[in-house]
Length: 115
Length: 107
Image 1 (cartoon, each protein chain N blue to C red):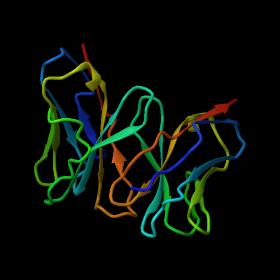
Image 2: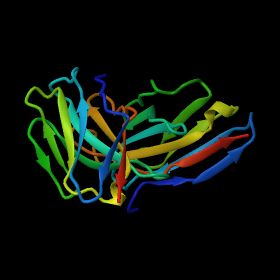
Image 3: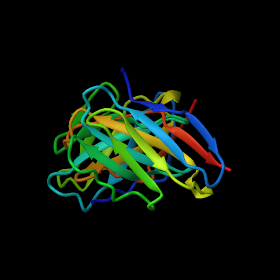
């Protein structure tokens, strides 16, 4: 596709339920990041995928959070037993190749509201 | 990972140049300096990046200090559409975002 696509764009869920967020990166992009952005705050790193290497999960805030990526395509971020503090916009970004000189393209995010 | 320091907010008049500063005193020799901006209700958008030399593109210019411990994003003529949060990021092992500078452009 032309850009990074995230779905759903908005999600309202009840506390304690599981949610799955999807990111479709730009075709051929090997590097993919997930970030969380709480209202009025900056971006918080969650997880990073680079090709077939083991993902960097050091930013995941708890074991309720997990993410997968199939090869160099779609990635899903799963939050189990959601809590109200999980309410935020979840952003995905991808890059053609991981390299310090390459920029990233971001999706528009999924706004998650836990009630 | 190296951190960046930016002013929380800045204000500019439309049609005037804007200089957005960023301090990164702990930058390593291989860290690239990236700038992104985030318009309201959108994901961040790439603006410009550089390593040592000043850089220009259609959106902005990036001036990098000789010691690389600071940089300045220059918008040559601010428009109302440039109102956004501007993030200065050091691209090393990871891609960490700070709190950014909220730019307000007055008509």
